[in-house]
Image (cartoon, rainbow, N blue to C red):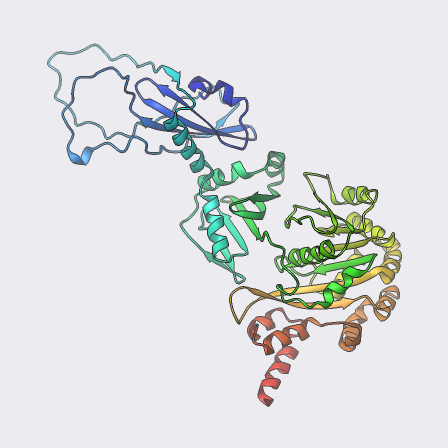
Length: 498
């Protein structure tokens, strides 16, 4: 159909970005066409611009009453159905959308049966401003109002945007999901997301049911995107990333965290639940190294979230899937690139952790993140990833090279909009290294109780400080505390004795 409609030179090059052209159909008029290809299927939208002025003159018909006036000629028709390459045939489905004329009196004499009308299609000038404008409008409609939704989410201070077929857009503001706008229909969401999905990930979405990528646009900013297929259709989650990399002070984090970046080798791990700011804190630490040293920094991420500008250091940012196949393969290659600092977006599997530990032993400072709930459990997780026969060697490596573990939680601010971080800090020290080497990590909480002289900060102490300063509520602090009963007793007792 699209080839017949003058698109022979366009169809072969169809991809995720809408392609537009125009044609004229005798008896219907000028048509604007916008089409995209999604894996092995093509989706097209046809817009009738106006009645064909070259149509055969017809006898004047009685003027219809006002209630039967035609719709505007440029009104948008319903979405065209998916056209699969395997389909044996299909028809041009254009709804004229005119109100039927009132019934006429029967003719005096019978007429010959009306022959089916054969529509002749001719290609209009592709530079016709009317056709181009309508085609651009159709393409914008095909991709939906995604840009507008993202801009609205940013303007309202949302950290995340969720689009789920059959539900209104959901903004995460202050840690809570807030609905905004009308329900997003499954077909509309498909049109929004299909042009944005990188070609390399389409097969992955079809086979695995999910994929991750970064969306970068000068007008709407940068986002980390996850697209998933689920019961009602597609679902997309957007993590809205600031173009400006925040400082530790802007994040409300202690300056002592920055001291760990002065080491020339070793391992720094940032931990906490998903969505609690690990990636942002990691970017702030990398920015410190980028600003203050002439090191060669290599980052491996999936996907790249914060884009680091050129400063004093030399930056090399690699994205899994785009610039390298896997985290381990990128880390192996990075050791041959003369790096000083290696940043791993996520220490997610045994081979990645093995390569990171090896790099930290051989004269490199390695920074990474893990989805673990506390500093002590992070150390256990690093060891337990390996088979029993390798765990003692991992303990020895950590005992000499672990520089800092930071675990953080985000809480709604009590003194204004936004979120604030409470942190647990466990710097590398001789007492900590001895516990790791001797397989006594279960004693780390006791060390944290008495080890403030080593720069140790307990999470509950950080929470108590935020509550006392009026920056977080007691209720929110108790939800993330390690020992909520003791924290409440300490804070209520403090207030009661004041």
